[in-house]
Length: 194
Image 1: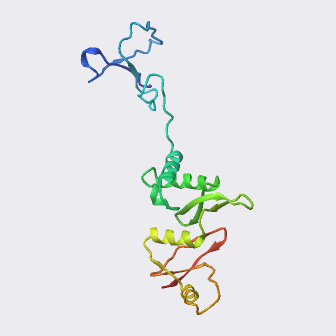
Image 2 (image 1 turned 90 degrees about the vertical axis):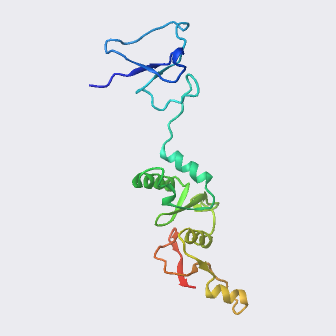
Image 3 (image 1 turned 180 degrees about the vertical axis):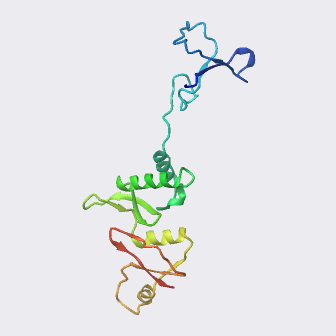
């Protein structure tokens, strides 16, 4: 049997410090009162839990997890996000579903296991692409994971003038082993020891 709702009235003698609860009987269907008779605000519990108490009649839309994730993405600096950045907003599976949905809608691009980046439509075909190059995203992602990056041997030779071959930017020198694959759309980076 469902619980009967309560009507909470704040009387002028308790100055809003406490509220008296009166249980509404099942036989009572609707109570009509003249507007001048009610001199204190009435709040109904157990019916609308998402009401905003700012003013009479003003309701606030309940915030879902996707809205909270989007708000955090807008506030957060940088372009690489870890799945753990959103772990305090909901459960592991819930956050995963929201991130997958954002990837499907083109707001994020997945660049690795638990790694996401901001996306923008490609000027050529409109598909979502990362806002930075893969090399810059990988350096930022590895920095977020606590792995230091350095210039590769080819980049050092090119800067020193020992070769005229321009590095493609698909190799990153790291200080320890990296087991993650970082890339998108079939293009992945490789790593070498610094």
